[in-house]
Length: 521
Image (cartoon, rainbow, N blue to C red; front, side, top):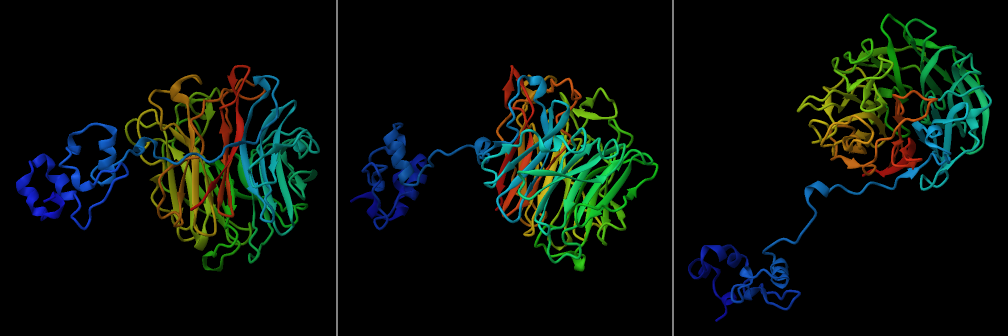
């Protein structure tokens, strides 16, 4: 009589302990099955399959469900990065005229056009602009640079939005033609052909401007555009906001922070299109700022400013306690902290707004475990910016010596999907001192929430591991790889841009701007 025809309790009497488990898993007569290599699972014991070390025996055990087939280990279980598209495609004669970094990306809500505005030192100006007409599959850099003329010399600090009410693109940079160092704008109907526009502000010492447009048709300020900046001609660098409903005439600046403490303008934002607003407050605008503590490695304080009346009046709240910054050392300008070897970074992040008045902010600070040099932190408000949660880390398990994370960006949509992305050295096993050190390699990593920031999915790669770019351009400060990367979300994709170091020119890894569309769950 065959074993599979007997009661399975006979296993306890017929087999040694080594084979007991296998016997218990063998099929009964009603369950007997033939494997892909022609052996009945009921014959495993009779044929001594458990003791055989050949490939055929292994296949039998797999087919019979007694052992597992091979599968990727946890170290390589992350999904592949989405396609990476280099948007800064201008050819470089040598590495010294090839510094392209610091980007803002925006997408049209009426067609597949995407525009990226970034810094690109080319001749006597610092502007680069690229567009895609196929949703980000390909990009074309516009040459000559459209923002390199019309407002005098362009000194970068890019901004760009698409105004759905007006059906027009607006983009800008710091420019000498707007008061010496003010905010110049250019306009376009298609994101490809641009015309010189107004000066959002005529100033002699404007810095680090940011821009947002209210594209929600039900909003009381539908189509209103906002620009925030630091005005160093006023006080200690007054954090200022102006707005416009047509892009031609701009309001007088509102000084939302003009005390004895310098507050850095980080980014202005508001609710995404289609999102339920908080208690009918459909014209809320937010400006994230940072008290940098006097610079260097001093502690920082995140601050959020809020307007409920379309940018006319403002209130403020602090986002968590003061914190220590990421600070591997100081730049040659000792006000600025740096991430080794050359990346200037003070911990700035990016705000975003989800549905029902949930406001999000991600930033970088000193790590808190195992000599960690830098981590990504996240806070949110569920009452339209009145109170804020306790900061929590976003980088996942990459929490150890040498494993820096820094310069996060953030976007959110009307469905409560929040995407944070940042630079990450989670694979580092040594310190980073020079660009050629293996410990200086980095990735762009993202983490997504599908429940309006209540929880986040595991980290995923946006880019492969990249070489640390150098900064060999004598016309750009040495301690620099861009100060920020501002991202956006539209139609189920998070659009992410960053400073990429993979391309080598004349034997030097240069700074490029690269794009990826990350599909949202």
